[in-house]
Length: 109
Length: 114
Image (cartoon, rainbow over all chains, first blue to last red):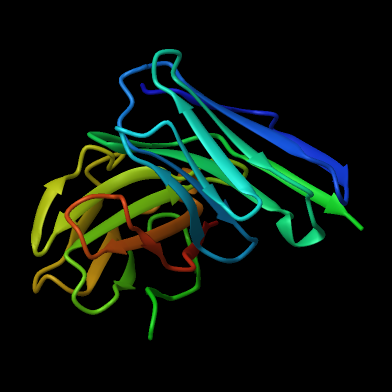
């Protein structure tokens, strides 16, 4: 079974900190890689998509990178805010569709 | 415009009952995906439709699970003879493309089997 591990599983930080969330695959044959956020009781919202030919994507305070050779992706959140509190999921969307285990983030004011 | 909707939002079933979960995708979206999310876990892929064709059902956990999309729009996920381990949130997503690059997710149906 395809394993996708996210570290840390949970993270609690004060507002303003810069954060790094990690995602790793046991199978390094990665194609497209996405990061989603999930708010309680709601569906998932796509944050960033890294196409197979790309190495990183940026949107506002978010930056995601992909290292296919090592099977790892990193989501960087700059200057965290309480509104960033959610669960963050990485997702491999080709052939086998696989979500990561998730990182629960709490940003305190 | 309207997003992906799912109904019911909550369903409580007694073990052994059959349930049907509905997904209304965004109008015109070609692809439709079903995922199962257990408490505290990431979603797991169940099945994928392109229009009315079910192209991948490799994630369905047993033959008690059945999905259909007869007219290429609304989809129904049916679970027969529900068991406690079926308790989860069932998420539906649709995409205008034939891939997962642009998935729009519904709010999910939380199924509790007693």
